[in-house]
Length: 352
Image 1 (cartoon, rainbow, N blue to C red):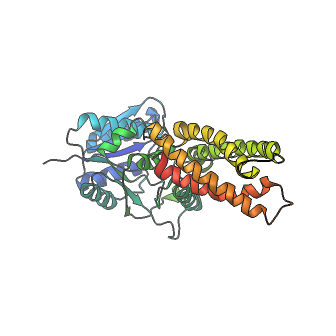
Image 2: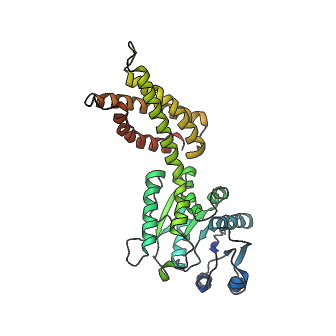
Image 3: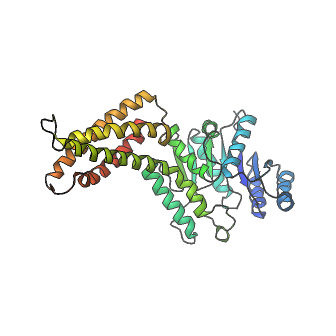
């Protein structure tokens, strides 16, 4: 049974390193090869793409203007899904000479063995001679992605990936037109239940990676904006909860005959208001829940009851030792700990 695994190379203003890579890929016998000309100036770079077509039989897809790496990849995905009925998946590689045919072959072999997994060609950033911006950017993003999204990847920005066909279909509608698309792809594995497998590859940086079109500040802002919605939702919900808690404490502090202590009652009422707000935002915006909304609501309600009881009893217990401290100041550290627990449970179980 035949199986097609195209090599996709997005290229914006490439140089001779692209031609060298194509020659090596052609010699290694990998095909088909698809290069996306992402709006490069024809007068300056047109000859390189012509050589790619004429000398190496490359299929060149062309953008009239620079549309970004994410758009280039999605357009190439669509082309492959339409053209190849026996498509197993694709391999993406960068045009700047950082990926060897040996590593491309290893990533392809891993895809053939695990055709439902996203295969990541991962570099070792503890090696010497790696540009500082690459070390900092990759390690920081890996830590953030692990802690906030629950996605474990040692090299989040590698361009050498093998992407299975079914996952490609999903990614056609994934957000992101530029470098942030590669981060969104990793986050999507969580939502879609796509396993991630890592393959060790050589760490190659040519001329301190000067040819890279990745801009650390500008593009990192785009990438970390993916996580911003997590923080905004949580902080705004916490603010609503704190304001409601302070208001209810003021109302019920001197009320006699309450069925529970005024701190517990204030905690419950404040959490009802903030939880309703938080669930709506989290389901629609933050986690983009894939489970039935009512099922998620039931799970969220159970979690909310657990959290509110832990918060109420926790604050009540600790307040006994610090009666002169405002209740809100006791509540803040307690709820910070519960926030981390709640976030993990929501991400893993409530919204999936």
